[in-house]
Image (cartoon, rainbow, N blue to C red):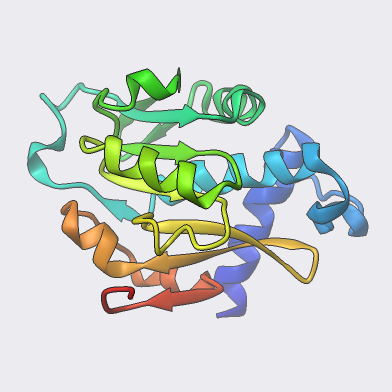
Length: 191
């Protein structure tokens, strides 16, 4: 388990420093004190989630189709995510980051990040994003709103909870390796 956590920490460290292998200062994980740092860590996690998600066979038009990440309500995170994924692939597919507006929520994406902390607004957007396969949010009660992964700040660090039923409803299989580093895993339907 320590090795898996170390891998996640190294990815986040590399994303934060802009180069692989560099380690940030000890205080860099204290995301609660720096909104910019929090966004960088969340962007690194979004990229990493792709490697631990198995999408259904019909999710891609062909073998050359890219993995598309849609971001709504967090343009700064989208810019950081675009920087992180530039020139990288996941499962031999290029990665495309699209900034979406609420009116574009029906656009087909493989991973959708909905920024913002208003649970009611997030819930409406989750329901409007019918084509999104893996939905990630950051509000209190995000899993109850239908998100598969929800970021939380725990002990001043970015963590995430997972709702397996929400992922499975969209045909997504999440790796057990991802689940071992989750803050909390919800296995049944949320009430």
